[in-house]
Length: 79
Image (cartoon, rainbow, N blue to C red; front, side):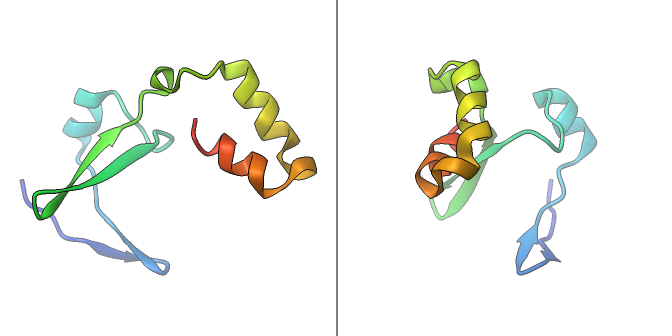
């Protein structure tokens, strides 16, 4: 399959075909990991269970982000 990048704000976006989303069981809320590899890039969904961090703790960090600033938000972004 081939596709092109499209301007999106100050960046660019790729369209993910419906059959790929269905096969990977992903949607617009799925976080994706991008890895540079062999002169290209590889995109894969992040399985939130792979983080090894309890979801309840991640929720707490997200809620307390405003109080504790940038350091906490960087931890929350890992989920």
